[in-house]
Amino acid sequence: MYKIPTLSLTNGLDIERIVRQHNARFLTIEKEFVVIEKSGFRRETKALFDELIPYGITEFVRSGRIAVAREHLGIGQDVETLLASN
Image (cartoon, rainbow, N blue to C red; front, side, top):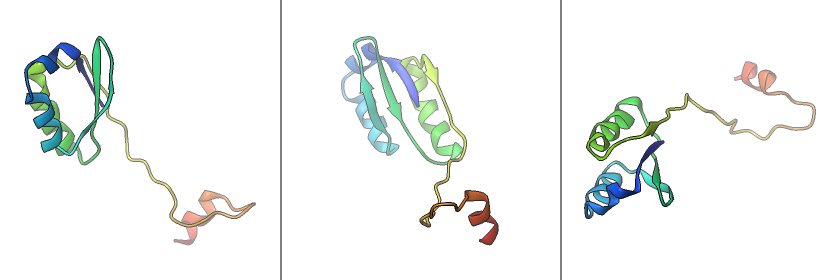
């Protein structure tokens, strides 16, 4: 996630174009700031970061890999047992 000042949006369609090119999305638009969300590989999030630098990134947060099991877990089944069987 990238947090930039809302005033950066006054530069015309530049930010919107950049966000669309990187398949990112506006998560929230507040009076003081805008939060942009981008998921993908490190090189992809870095490329968007590099393009947003001139607009004044005030915060940047990158999370680690997140996984959700594709199989339905029954009552009493734990994730470790399911993962060990795969």
